Length: 176
Image (cartoon, rainbow, N blue to C red; front, side, top):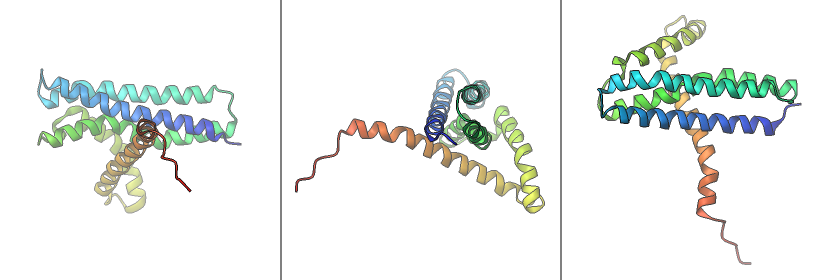
C-alpha cells in the first residue's frame, strides 16, 4: 500500500522548498547587486541556493526512507525525488534567470549558471540522443526549463492557495 497522506506531506514540503529556493536566492541576488555586478552576485549566491535545495530534498528523502511507512510508499517517494530533483534545482537558477531577464543581461555569463547548464546537459543529452539522435537537445533544454518552471509554479500555487483561501475568509452562505 502507498500512503497518500505521506506523499501529500512530502509534495507539500517539496513545494515549500521550491518556493523558498526561488525567493531566497532571488532576494540574495538582488541584495548582492548593492555590492557587485549581477553575474558576481549570481555566482556567489547560486551555489548556496543549489546546495540548500539539494540538502532539503535529501533530508526529506532520508526522513521518508527511515520512517515507518510501507515499502511501496518509500519507493514512490524515491521515484518522485528522482523525477523532481532537476525541477527543484531549477528554482534558485530560475530566480537568477528572471533577474537577469528584467535587468536585460545575459545570464550565460554566469559561471554557476553555465556549470548548472552543463550538468543538466549531461543528464538530458543522452535522453535527447535516445529520442532523436541528439538533434533535439535545444528542444529538450527548452522543454526542461518550461516544465521545471511549470512544476515550480504549480507547487507554489498548491502551497499558497490554501493560505489565500483562509486569508479571504469562509465562503458566504447561500440562502435557500
